[in-house]
Length: 289
View (tube, rainbow, N blue to C red):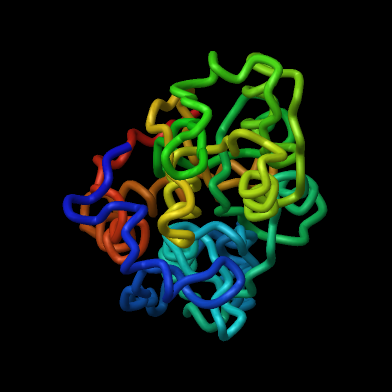
């Protein structure tokens, strides 16, 4: 993970303006993608049903700076949110007709299976276990699990190998929880990553672990308090979750992603959100499984 040149995540200038519960991301909201007019889909497909209804329900995180953070108007902002808007626009649905539903790590699969959401765009790692019950389009971003520690790294943690027997906080039901169990059996699991920051401040845990981009966002919004170790030890392909065996919808979303990679829509969404802190990466190759 490389920080944008001249933009240190611990910069004091960022500290006073932002809090996790408070306002928006440090990101700007880009202009909405143009909504497709008079678009037609094959009858009976999910795309046709959503287009006819003129609305869509998308699950995302509400507590993850840069990717999905609830703003003062009650609407989430971030890179995942912009990706959801891109897909909705291609369905002929405007951003103001998206219903955003908070999805934490533990409820993403049930929400998709039960039809509570049409899509989940929520720093959602594609893995084989999840693919048994839901499908994924993408990936649209490749992250890596890392560690967040107190500023100055007082415990001198350089990677997960330094965590044996030490308390670490992560989110219940996440791939991070499963991965970190290989390094320590002293794991405190909570429902959101923001709830891990208090235990880290108090010394109840020595580190918080999840994907590097999520940790960078947390550090960005609590400038001067934390730092990312910057030694990722996994590869986390972020995908867009949808109902199992809906091949037509998965193909449609993959087509939208690839088009956004090529026409600059993906880069524009990144640069206005996560790109305010992190360098713009190359988009990954979509998996057409």
